[in-house]
Every structure is written in structure tokens, then in C-alpha cells.
Amino acid sequence: MKDWRYSKHYVDSAIKQAYSIVKSWRRNYIKGERRREKPIVRKRFVRIKETLYSYKNGKIKVSIKPYEEYITFDISKAWFLRRAKGEMGELILNEHYLTITFRSREKIKTKGSIAWDCNEKSLDGFNPRIEKDKITKDLTLLFHIHRVYEIKRKRLQSLASKKYSIRSILAKYSRREKNRAKDFVHKLTKEISREFKNYAHGFEDLRKKNMFNCSKEHNRRIAKTNWKMITSFMSYKSKVKLLNPKNSTKRCSRCGKINAPKGASYACSRCGLRINRQLNAAVNLYLQIVVFSKFEALR
Image 1: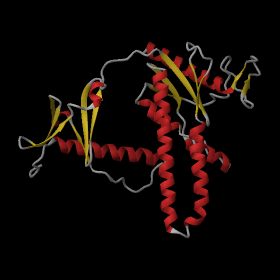
Image 2: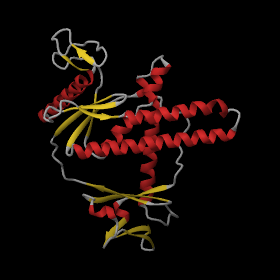
Image 3: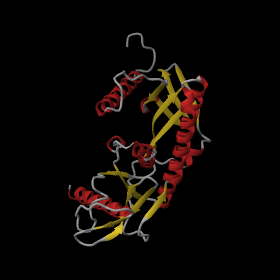
Image 4: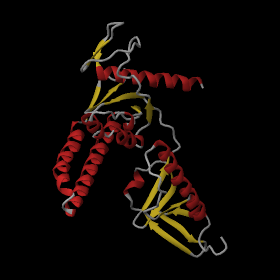
């Protein structure tokens, strides 16, 4: 720190961010999701603590060198100020733009919870207080997006080894596929959060690597799903709970016996319950939420 001319809090911020990157890499490496090479910061950015800036009359004043140099951002006419709730938190500054975070301390009372069963071409939800027996959101378009680009890549991959230019086309298709899938998931989660405002949403904690088996066709179908993206995007629009998916489809939602479902229907050999297979899974997931909420109340 002897010859450091800038604000000292930038050093704390850099150390904190470095630890965060390494911890994230280590956690994913243990899971087998990352390689052994050390993580590298590819985009330059800095996290600005609340002690390093002031906000007054619609202007953010960021300290660079104490009492010498500052950067000022005028956000007095910014559209998001009317919609932002809570107080301004940490800033993230990179070479092109400034990201402003807000934290809200008010606790929003939830009307209830909806449990969602994640399927290949649909999201099926359940809440006994909602008039619909089963809440369904169609994911066929999302599946179709991945299928279309899979066919396009298949046609080009046979030529990719011969012509280098085709590799850039493959990369372009991959970017388009990712962007279209993100756009669909953003719109879907926005629709769910608005339709079921102030509801908590329970999603299965699904990990794709545990679902792959020897069948190539099955593995390809699993790879086309975006369950984790849906949960991630939903988490900053509504309250989200992760639920254990084990036997949610096989367990009878009435008596608890494990049965093997056949097709789209579920029939219990013990109590005789006959129900839609996906609805049965959503009910089982909802029962998990009920148990968790009761446990938290006792604590």
C-alpha cells in the first residue's frame, strides 16, 4: 500500500472478488464441472463499495483518488429510478457501463406457494387454493428452438473438418440458439411472476449430469432442457425454493406408495388413486413445501 495512490477500499474489493472466483472454481471443480486450469478474469471490472461513492441530486460521485479525482454519473433522468425499491447498494463498473444494485429490506408476504414439476415440454404447477386443477406452461417452443439448431449443426458438422469457415458458422448458430432460448425463458418467467404475483415458487433441484444414461437419444433430449436457466431467471423475479425431485413422479400423492407410472397417467396399486402423472408429481412437490414451512414455523 506504500505507493498506492487510489482509494484503499479498491484493494479490499479486489481481494474479496478474487476469493469469490477461486471458491466458485473450486466448488465446481470438485463436482467435475470445471477443468484443472486456474480461472482467469477475462473482462475487467471493479466492484465499488458504498463507502467509495456518494449519491446526491440524481448524481453518483465515485472516488478514484481520495480528495483528488472522481467520476460522476448523472442518472437523474434514468427510467429505473421510478421502479427501483429499497436503497442503492454496491456498484459494478466495467469498461463500457455501470451496473447499479438495489437492496430491499421490506419483507413481502407471500400469498402461498406453487410447486412446479419440470418436464421436457411443459412446466406443471400445483396449488390447492388456485381454482385450476393443474397449472401448465408450454415449453414446446423452447424444445423446438434446440431441435432446429441441432439439425442445422448436424448438417454442417460433417463439413467443419474440411472448411475452417464453417466452424465460425457453427459458433454463430450456437450463439443464436443460446440467445433465443434466453429470450424465451425471460418471457416465460416474467409471465409466471406477473400471473402469480407474491407467490413463492418451488422447483425441482435437477442436475442434468445425474440424468444421462447409455441411450444417445435420451441424452440428447435431456440436453435440450433449460430447467436450471428457468430456476435462475425466476429467482430474481419471485421467491424460489429448491425441492428434492427423488421419487416425485413415482410416489403416490395420497398414500405414499412407490409405483411405476405408465404413460401420462398414474395409478396406485394400494389406494387406487388415478391421476395425471405430472399433476401427481406437482402435488408431491407441494407437500414438500408444506413440510418445510411447518418445520420453519417450529424453529
